[in-house]
Amino acid sequence: MLKHPSYICILLLSITLPLLLGCQTTQSASPSPQVKKPTTYAPKHQDPIPLLVYHHFCETEAGVVSGATRTIANFKIDMQYLHQQGYTAVSYQDVMNHYDNNSPLPPKPYVMRFDDGYLSNYTLAFPVMQQYNAKATICVIGVHVGKSKNVIPRFTWAQAREMIDSGLISIQSHTYDLHKADPLGVTRLENESLADYKTRLKNDFTKVNTLIEQNLGYKPYLLAFPNRVCNPAAQQVAEDSGYTFTTARLETIPQQTSNQKYNLKRYSIFSNSKLSDLLK
Ligand SMILES: [Zn+2]
Image 1 (cartoon, rainbow, N blue to C red):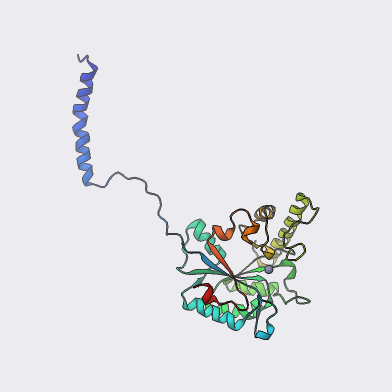
Image 2: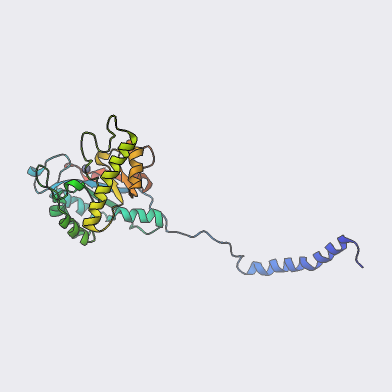
């Protein structure tokens, strides 16, 4: 009888040790045990992605109505420059898909946006976008769509549909009717309770979302806050209203903005802007 426990240990070791060592020796020649490697993804785009924001376009210098009006001749120069420099227009959704879901982006992406929904986006800029097969996002003010009296004319829902059908244009939200100077954009009114304020914004966002859905068949995901003014309560209502991308001036949103999150660097394009200077 083997009574001493240490004898058993030695016996076991004498059997298992050569096996273990042998095992190690033979294993070293074959692939090492499978360690689960983290899934490798295509590297994320590193440089900030230029976001070019335009407004109204005109045919000649005589048609310039504000600092934000761009002659179509200058817009064509912009598009030619981007094309020559190897830039490719991508949508906001493409950018979000890249950072959220690892879908690829072209090497030199940029995002183009037209604000306020001017008819000139349709008559002047859209044909150029088609020529270059370039994507753009247009943020419309719901109440103004199709209007031409007492305002710079805006395109209609039918024209919006035609642009969407090209596969190049996405129509998104610039609120239903909050694009005003007093109060400025989504600024809370004096003596307005927080609850009333949130309800007012919610009603506005719901109205424009419904209009877009009824006329274009989808819910917008992007809200460009008018006058680039925002605050935490407005941001919360926007998120609750289904917007996954919001844009506003950084100082007005205490938390990280969508532009930062998605690595976009905004450039407002004015009448006299020179893209080659801005993007060099
Ligand atoms: Zn605007």
